[in-house]
Amino acid sequence: MEAKKSKKADLESKRILFFEVGLTVSILLAILAFEWKSPAGINTSLIAELGNNNGTIELPPITTDPKEMVKPEPPKVVISEKIIVVDNNVEPNYNTDIFEEPKDAYVPPVIRIEEKEVDETFERVEVMPTFDKGDANHFRNTYVIPNIRYPQEAIDNGVAGVAFVEFVVERDGRVTNVKVLNKIDKSLEREAIRVVSSSPRWEPGFNNGVKVRVKFVIPIKFVLNN
Image (cartoon, rainbow, N blue to C red):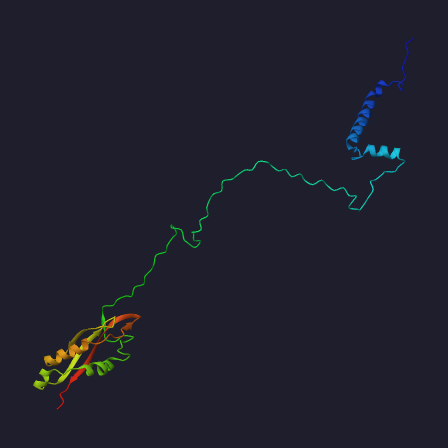
């Protein structure tokens, strides 16, 4: 007679269920193992002392007395027995001028503004030449007439007349190009040219801020006194 097993007692049919339950429990234990954090910094020796001293901890005494305070040891000074001599025999240069420019320094060119010379001769300019702070009439009355020497030849011949004398006042104030424009006795002409040519220097004339040559014509009258 063959023995029959009960379905409730048959554990072979529940093997898959047991496997799944076991796997699930294993996974949960693994997760708990990873998530678990042990308390850090626990001093087990301190716990042991607490157990031995009935829960009391002996601390070092606190004091404010400077005499009882432990002073740190002063730093040790190491003195070397060897002396190293450094060669420093460089003599200072006391002749160096701090304001002296180097030889290769850039030197700007010197720009010279030269006065422009005008060779043209003018009769009227912005600033006319002056003689002793006066004009051409002042020159004739104060210099020419007082210095006229009536030629003896003209006196002997009873010659008189008026000489129209032309001259130029140069840029430096000299009187040049003296000549008589009209016909007159030669002796009177020479005397008129002589006295005007001997004139002292004038103050030159200016035109547009530049010294220029200026031409004048003055009459010189020769009269015989009876």
